[in-house]
Length: 247
Image (cartoon, rainbow, N blue to C red; front, side, top):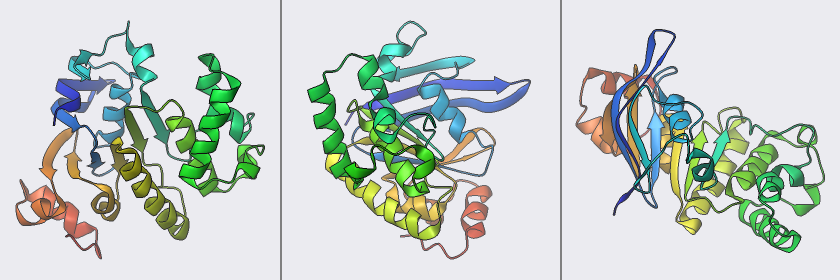
């Protein structure tokens, strides 16, 4: 199976600090890849590079074998869904307007938008009676479902999730985890999911990519990380997350 996204020798520096050292990474089609590691290790930087919010200092990023450049990034973004922590919804727009934002910008018909909106409500278990509400009138879990619908509106080839469940309480988080996993499987979606939670990475990940200090330390399954740690940090990271059972 060919990779949908390939990073070749990609690096990024902020104000003299190396956020990401020279990195090579492939994101396989139809798989859920989990980026995990401590805060500041470069996880979110990788996502921002892929969607073109920032540019690499060196190296190349290819999407479906097409190298991402400033001239094509706008069109490529329409093929990528992006969800951030707490949803990133526009507070002055209703749930419906948030979901339909890009579709309206691209001139989709009312019939097409309405049909897709109803599909997404069913897919994400979001009641269509809540579509007229503003984000402040929705719960945290409901806002994340709206954010996910917005990301899926244009049927993206790649879905980028940057700690989307981190701010939710445990019961809501567990419910959304279950629904998200079912959605990924149903859509056969290619997903790159950032988390700092090892249990969440194990639950979702076809492949886990562990990062530290701007570098990829190890890639593989949870059992690979436990049984064949590439360096002492891998064992330290796993042991620090007490109560997590690796399978």
